[in-house]
Image (cartoon, rainbow, N blue to C red; front, top):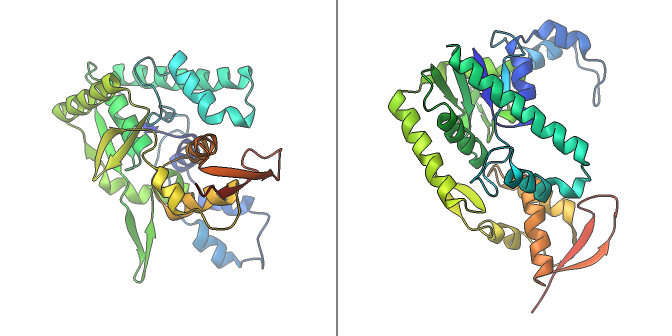
Amino acid sequence: MLEVVFSDSEKGFMKAAKNYNDKNIIGEAVSYAGEKPTKVELEKHFEGQAVGGNSRDVVNIGFSLDVGDISGSIDGVERQNVFLKLWGRFDFDNKEKEQFFLNQRKDMEYLLSTAKNGIPIRIWKSNTPYSTCGLYFVCNILRNIDCNISVVSLPKYKQISEDQIAEYSHWGEVEGGKIYQFLPLEKQLSQIEKRIASDYWHDLMVESAPLRAVINGKLISVPENFYDFIITKNLPDNDIIMARLIGKLLGEYSLGISDSWYALRIDKMIEDNKLIVVENKEPSHPYGKVLRKAYI
């Protein structure tokens, strides 16, 4: 069974989930925040089960496919330009960029060879735009391959006790030892469902909008300023450091949008004189600018 996820953090958790062993995890826990927990408390916190299989059988397909030009190949010039646009402020050099796309290419080739060899494919999908894009993209590249595909869709809420629920927006928020609890949600993807998802991706490729968003459960193309109202709505009357503003947006809105996209839109607002840079308080930090609303 090959597990398919759509971000690096999800890949890390899923690799841990494949052969999760809570006893090993507890044995490796050597530092604590605050008072040292008891053995019983540690066992409760880390209790879990393995999903099963080999941790090597996990691939991350697609890089922020909800953002930017998708008319070409996943690792073509267009997608590399998106990478630089989103993450260029973090000073990635060409070697790091090449390694990133090499990893993407290897994972996609592994997915294709696995499907052709008749090994079942299990896709872990959330309702975030990047994950929905990933599902459609995978269905498109596997369209003409006769293979067994199943999907585990992340629910928005999961009851964890009689009086507690957990809220999730993407699989990277689910601990490795808890992922097995979602296996009963696994559903087979029929051939017609695969074709429909593939057709959706083809339509999105033709549109190749600057951004894609999930609206009322449907993935659609939207303009790049689609989320701008959320930024302006959360601007205080007093000055605020960019990092704090972005952290507030990520914490209050579970939309599956990256911090780098918010940063790009804030930069655009600065360029359009809708925001003023009071000072660059932390020049070494990509989000170190102090911002103020511009009253025009």
